Length: 104
Image (tube, rainbow, N blue to C red; front, side, top):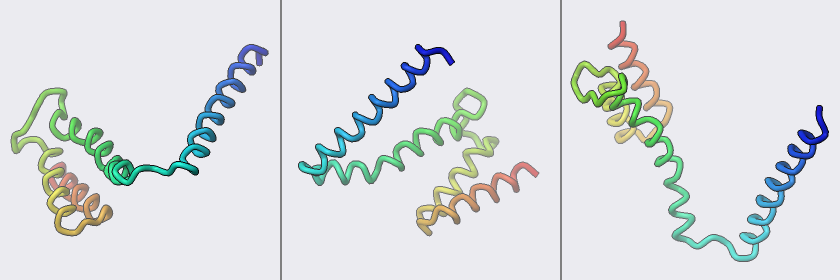
């Protein structure tokens, strides 16, 4: 391995480590505001929604909100199960079961 590449990797590791340690040290003394902690609780839901919704509504690259869209039907059923049961395993199982039933 060339010396420049090794120096680049070590430099990136040092910058990553220092920024993480710096933020942890700062937050240790100041803490997070309560509104920020509440906001962070919804972060996984927002990210997951942003990842899933395009694949449900745009399965072929174009908007498809018809009953011929298997992803949309499975997503609706999974959403209803998630609303009623609030369990990730039941939600995923329902969505997969509907998808398998529609495909076979």
